[in-house]
Structure formats: C-alpha cells, structure tokens
Length: 378
Image 1 (tube, one colour):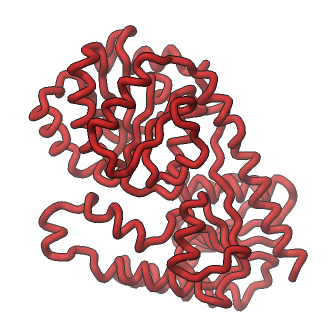
Image 2 (cartoon, rainbow, N blue to C red):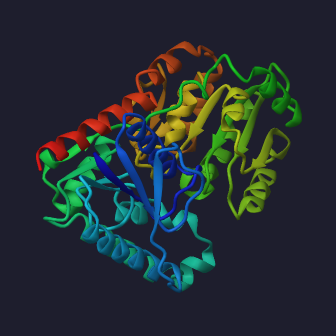
C-alpha cells in the first residue's frame, strides 16, 4: 500500500509520536510505501520511510494548526494514497486515531489542573482550545472518515457520545509496549545507582510517579497520600520523574507536608526504563489519560500499577492482582491504602505476564489489519 501517516510534529518522544514511529516502521518493514506528513521531523524510524514537510509560514499556534490541516487537504488532493491515516487534528483522512481522547473531556476533567491561578483567571489559551475543539469536530463529522481507532473502551464510548460516531465504525486497539526495553530483569545495576543517587536504601519501598504535567497526572493528591502512607511505613520513598514548569511549587508542597526528605524530584529524563527498575510500585492517579503508555511500561517492568478510572488503561488491570483501580475522585486515603497494600506484596510476575499480552508487535498487527480492510474495500 501507499500510506500517508499524518501528524503535525514528528519526534521520538511523546506517546503519539512513538506510535507514529512504531506504525511507520511496521508498515515499511513489510514493504508498504510510507510517507509521514508533518511540519517538522527528526530521524526516520525506518530507512524506507520518507517525510513530506508541509510547512506554510504561519504566525501563532492556532493558525499553525489550521494551516497544517489545509496543507494536508491540498497535498492529499494532489497525491494518490491508498490510505490516509490521521494521528492528530486534521479533516482529510480515511482513518483517524483518537490517541488523545476527546478534547472536551480533557478540558472538563483535567485542563484546569494544568494551569496556574493567573492563567485560569484571565482565560489563557481560550481561543486555542476552541480551535482544537473545532478541528476535532470537523475531523469526526459524518463523511470525514471511514473508520476510527480508539485506544480504550473509555474513549470509544466518549466519541460515540460526543460526536455521534456509529459504534460499528470504531475499532478499539490498546497501545503496545517495547517488552525488551522495559523488563524486570534488566537495568538492575543502573537502577541501584539511581536509588543511591536519590539517597534511597536497598531495603526502601520506592513509589514511582512518572509523567509530564504534574497537575493532570495527579501528583498533588499523591503527595498527600504519600504523607499519610509514610507515617505507617517509615522506609517508603517517593521518586518523581517528568517535566513540569511548576516543579518548585510541588517541592514546596512536599516540604510543607513534612516529606521533603523522602521525596526525590528528578525532573524530565529519557531513561524511563531505569526509573521503573528503581521502583517497587507505580502510582498514576491521573485526572484524564485516554490510555497512559506508562501503565504498560510499568507493568512490563514488573511493577503493579495504581491508577484511576480516568485512565483508559485501567481496563486491562485486575484489581489487587496486577495493580489497583481507584476512582479519579476517590480521595487521598484510598490512594494511601493502596500504597499500603502493595508495600506488603512484591511479585513482578503478574504485572509482567499481563504486559506481554500488549506488545508493540501486537498493536501494529491489529492496526495494520484495519488499514488492510479499508484498502481492500475501496
């Protein structure tokens, strides 16, 4: 097939960006002709993948979104593709994937937690959010697509409710994980070094929080829950990894709670596999995640995952077997109780065996099957 994958920004970091690379490499590896339509890009994920840069000069982030969508429309009209697969907000496609879920749901459940009080007061970003909503609605309007891929049942139900997409037009394909990179038996030496760097002892029980955007990912309730938990389990420690411009305010909150000496803030890193290997449990009390990739990464690393019903990945977990599922507004005491539960159980086999059912290869094969069906039904 001649396939166009559409995403405004190509990179090797970020959930959707990694997904683009995984699908592109899989398709190119089986002999398909793959082009990634984008405004900017890094190194190609496969030697047979090429880039089509659509970069009309445009001021401002709002106009860049609209201009890119128009550029895609114009390019597709002039080029013969068997499949156009959209991974972002455009309106010219055969197949569209909602890796970020429905934008209005994100706005309702999590956006306020990502902004400072000043930004909330002045309504900062209002027009950008309106533009994103309009682009999403146009891309999911009747006749704009042939099929839709959702990465969880949660997102599938949401897109049916918000955009009236027919149920039989949606395929649910869960994300995939690199089972070699994330593995409980690897990285032990580097993980031990990381624990020592943070001042953690070998016998400490280490809770990991990993994510960019601390507000949406739920670090504030985790800090409060950890403060309760540590009073019962003195040898517990919290490792915080990921980028947030307001990190200093969270460090001050940890100090106010009296746990600063037990919490290590590392900021953004590119060695997530080492961070998982240095921990005993992964906590992600997120306010909204269509399917947090870190859920699978932690499981593949042998860690039980404590997360919320607002994370679509909770659908693959079995409570108190591979992790814990709590309500998004379940409270800090519930989160502290689940930390206590896992501090008494350390078995990497069940999380790992669950993750092995969700490899990148499985995800790519299921996605390619959808592409093949669309191509052969043209």
